[in-house]
Length: 293
Ligand SMILES: [Fe+2]
Ligand SMILES: [Fe+2]
Image (cartoon, rainbow, N blue to C red; front, side, top):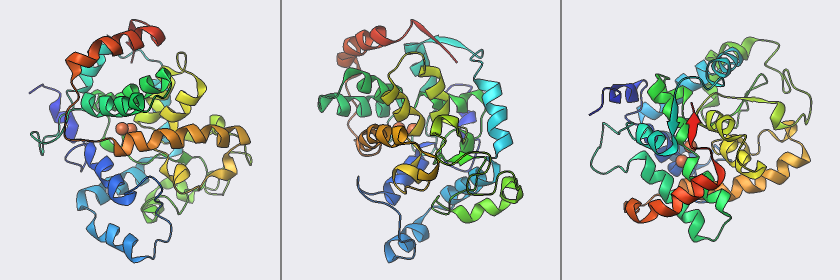
């Protein structure tokens, strides 16, 4: 096991995948929303939640502040940490292992390939297949020492009031921004319908990979990358007041992408040896030979 594997456990989750497994409980099908939080189904969801997952959300909601996001953007968006070929980057990402259950869980690349293969199988455009392959590469943040709550978790805007439609919104009362008059009003530092491009999102794997891929992929792909964990909007519609008509138009792409991420998991690993030539060509079509992290 690599010397980096201990960084997987910088947080309460046994593995980063525990958050995504929880999403499946919260949104068991492609149309489900968590609205009606007083319903029996929702109470069941909350009651059955593992303590580790609950603690994960608590830490995320306390620590994702406006200042934290600005600081992480300054730290990571210089892309001067490491330079790797795409394939070395996937090997690097695969050092994230699930210590709790190493036999039954697929590695990170396999989740990415299942997502991209499901997209390809539906005859979607090749840039969307590539988006499927890359959407979780930002989880390498864990290997750079970031805690779990700064890598995964639902994403949402900072710099304005936290929506009560965010999962476990009660934990925001321990976030310092909750009491800061600059940040705790409906619009906070933003203007009505200012556009999501002008909004700071929580720091995590989505934001990181979005910025990394910005020079190379079409706008729809960039929306899929940046907002794929923005469940408070794509399932709960909690931030329309910050969005432009253009954002709404592009969220159709986000909504098309999301089921491939959430519902393509299968215990059967894709045959990487067979698939590799196709993906090598695809990567070469859109990306440079090395990526900067
Ligand atoms: Fe993700
Ligand atoms: Fe994913």
